[in-house]
Amino acid sequence: MNLGNASIPKFFILLGFADRPWLELPLFAILLITYPMAMVGNTAIILVSRLDARLHNPMYFFLTNLSFLDMCYTTSIVPQMLFNLGSTKKTISYVGCAAQLYFFHIMGGTECLLLAIMSFDRYLAICKPLHYTLIMNPRICILLASTVWLTGITYAVSEATATLQLPLCGLNKLDHLLCEIPVLIKAACGEKTANELTLSVVCIFMLAVPLGLILASYACIGHAVFKIKSSEGRKKAFGTCSSHLIVVFLFYGPAISMYLQHPSSISRDQPKFMALFYGVVTPALNPFIYTLRNKDVKGALGNLVSGILRRSDS
Image (cartoon, rainbow, N blue to C red; front, top):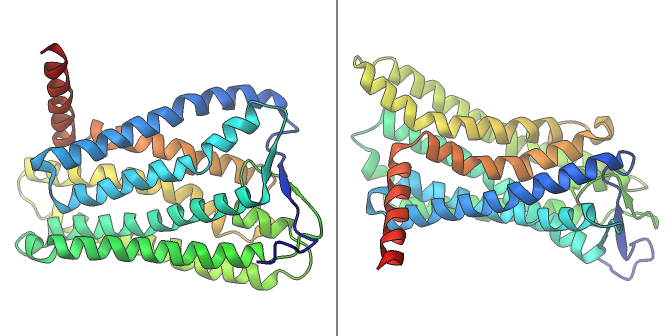
């Protein structure tokens, strides 16, 4: 990346909702509420998963990774959004934009793959219960999580670096709330067909393939659950999967509508609302989805709060 290139601006102007200034105050208020919610909720999930011995199993090991991802994911974009929405200065430095591009896509790519691994874990737990502890031993869990992180980092670094190489011809206005690959490709001048094609191919691998694995896992799970004669057994099996399924649809729906379209066909405001949803709303909702629908997590949270209160009283 040649930072001395005259075509590279020193900063970008993030236009956001400049044509709808009345949206800025409500969005600022929403972010000011949802960001602390996301941080506190995901921190609580990590704490109870590590402190409660009953949650020391593969499902909660991967859930801890997901919570950490969500915290990093939303932190990579929300502080900058709050600064821009709360002031008349709507800029981000070139270096800041590049850093945001890398971190945002590392977390996003890793989360795509992690959700697929979590569905595979549920498949083994329900469809192969006798072999579950043998297959999903601590070593395999760490190996799977490490592979997911490494793949996400590789994807983001390669794709973001290729995007930053595109000539901008001095243009420094981005019609968005943050620095995102499709938006930068759309803003670039010159030949960018190769970048658009590469983005499409990589997104098929990072989005469509993991989603296909998730759907295949849940098809097998559904088939196995309907074979359970006990209604209580079916209810318990569905209960362990429903939270994850909700998170999958909340994350993949907006991401697919954004990244599997041709950049030139993306409407003006679509990237902004999609980024707000899968980068802000989903990380804030995930802890509540897992706690409200999971007795083990609710019990662990209750024990944690009770322990804190007892120590404070003493």
